[in-house]
Structure formats: C-alpha cells, structure tokens
Amino acid sequence: MHPCLRCGACCATYRVSLHWSEADPELGGSVPEALTERLDAHRLAMRGTWERQPRCIALDADIGTRSRCTIHPLRPSVCREVDASWEHGVASAQCDKARTAHGLPLLTPEDWSTLLR
Image 1 (cartoon, rainbow, N blue to C red):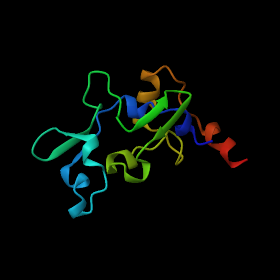
Image 2 (spheres, rainbow, N blue to C red):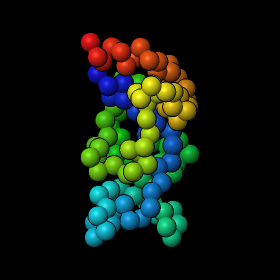
Image 3 (tube, rainbow, N blue to C red):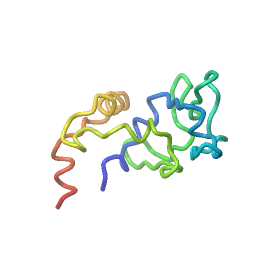
C-alpha cells in the first residue's frame, strides 16, 4: 500500500493556498470552489487549512492509520507537487516535517522497496 494512504499528515499540517483560477471551471480549473476560501485578491485556500491546527476539508483520514483525499483527481496543483519522502529517491522536507508534527516515523527507502514486492 502506498505510504500516503496510511498517513495524511501533510493535509493536516500545511495551509493549502492556490491561485483562484484553479477553482474557476471557465478557465479549466478543477478544484471545487465550495471547498475553498479567499485569502486575498489572487489566492484561495482549501477550507480548514487556514486554521490554527490545519486540516483540509477534503481529507478523510485517521492520521497515521488511513488517509484519502476526497477530491484527489481534482486537487490543487500545490498538493500534486508534494512528494512523499523517498518516493522518487530523495527525502522530502515537507513530508518529513508533517510526519514529525503528527508523531509519525519518517519514511525510508525501505518503505518503497516493500511496494515493489
């Protein structure tokens, strides 16, 4: 199983901000606008991620046990850009920080080698 499906820490650690056009279907945006809130004239944030203890509204998870994004195919570009540590052969500072914040062990290259078996 992909380690992200047992994690969800990044979605409950960071503010997810995006350009408003990502939620405008007329411009090709796919993020559901109802799940966003305005930050400023150019940026939106996924609801829940602007809170003192962030948790994305699209996250369905028990952090560290099971996790899924309810809008995965429609998620913002910033979410698509966050790699899990060692998924592509290098550590990810964002992943490591989020996992540490939730008391989860850091991912290792071995976490990925078990997926290949």
